[in-house]
Length: 423
Image (cartoon, rainbow, N blue to C red):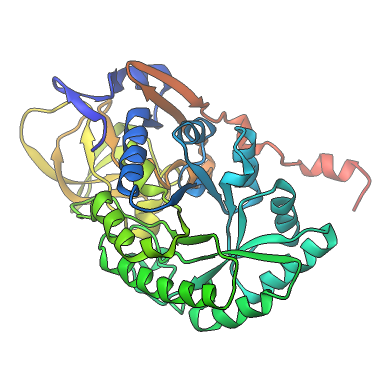
């Protein structure tokens, strides 16, 4: 459920008319619902009540500071995959002991920063990285808290770009090497192996892959405990999907009950790293129709949002529902909804039946809260959009629209660079 509903013929975010958002802040603009974020977190918390658990929101899904503040107020920690994300959550005052530090290619300076911050644990992705963590911890005179990410070789049945739990993927350590790695670490004073983790992928819409991974992790964790590993946490990652185009992912309660029936006997805190399931359906991309174009074989509805604003359809062939902010009476027609970017991939809908929207019509591209703005860029010299958070009847600007001048901020003209005298 989300809080983007019609009041009369007009789409609202909570009690805010989306026309008012467009008038105040322009388009394209990302619009988020605080009530939807709150509801999704509470539903997930209730679903996991049968397990000792810790929810670490995946910052990569949507990293806006105001969004992070809302999520923190609701009792969640964070999963950061870079120093940039770590600094973001530190900036809002997050307790480092509520933060896990992940990522497949951590530099030594990033590892040191995470240890200096005092994160709950570092999620280690390889034996080589574990050695680096040990060396850095030794130089700091500490014992580093570590959870090794294992690769359970489970097919999540999702898009190949967001599948992370197969042996061919770059993530994690093969499961059959884990016991020897943990056994060797028992004698290493620079490492404290507080957890073991897996993550099979994103936008998973079936329960079976999660259960398969949970059974494999249960067996491994029991073996690690038996050999004396001081485990406190077992991570199950995130990945629970949302409905974009008719998918029927398992309800959170069914997901939680199933995992509790498998993992409840461990007595460990189960760490979850949800992102999309919290924020995905809590946001829309508001965009205006620029014009309608009759091509040789197709009709195009051209909007002012482009693939630089929302890259998921171009990158993942993802489907996002599109609807007019106002209901339009009359016949519908096949058309492509496309943006202004000079790429044929800049397409949001391919031969779908829509009302005959006219220039100036306001549209909402649905389910854009996750992996929307965070993946936006300035391609084609296009400033990134604004972000707005609605709370009841109020709309708050939580990111200003970039200016044209900001497109070249940080660049140095050649005449300036050469005048410094350095070559």
